[in-house]
Length: 271
Image (cartoon, rainbow, N blue to C red; front, side):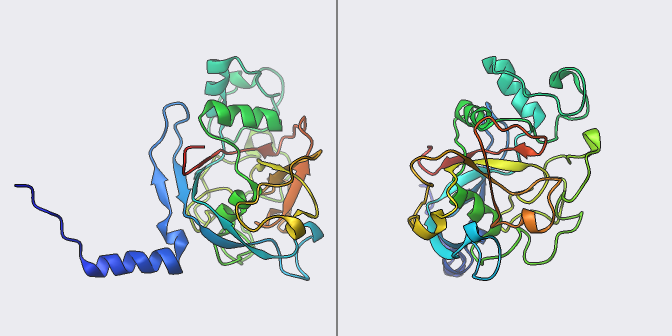
């Protein structure tokens, strides 16, 4: 006869305490998907502090407010050139321009684990749909970046260093962007890497500078319409202020820059 497992009451109490008092400790890694073999981190449901306090940050980041976000999963790292080329080969999608010089991006060596850049919002959206995912909302992105305690940067409130973020740099060809996940002191409280610097990241929302004053407090997904799309996280070229977790960027659908990439998300319901 199969023996029934008996749970240690102390372990149950500890798990319940972590879920309530320290939700970032409950983040989990998900198995990789063969279409897009990258680990995803599950961010637990719950509220977090979104935006910047009065007198800090930029006008479009205020007011700071408590926002509830349902559980979702986010790619641990930015989409790389290798992963994007796999998507291009599978779908016939057009390659992004080569930011490193002449010739096709696919012919370059040593860039496979660098984040793909020079992608438009539609490129990013198409990739995520192909992989069975979607772009994260601004609220999801920001919660994954700063946890629940209103911290300034993914690692805390301390100033950026080269061990925490790739930022405030001049263009140096293939040496400019760093391999994804290569900075040991940079991950967010959930373990998501490179949410400050390296490449900025497209998000799903339309951009509205006044949205933090009018948006709903549960699963905000941005305005219903707009002209520009949101971009988060800052890049290798941005200064310390511009890679804060609350900093909001924006760009048109067709914008391509050598500092803009993306990562994908998935809801707990698979959408």
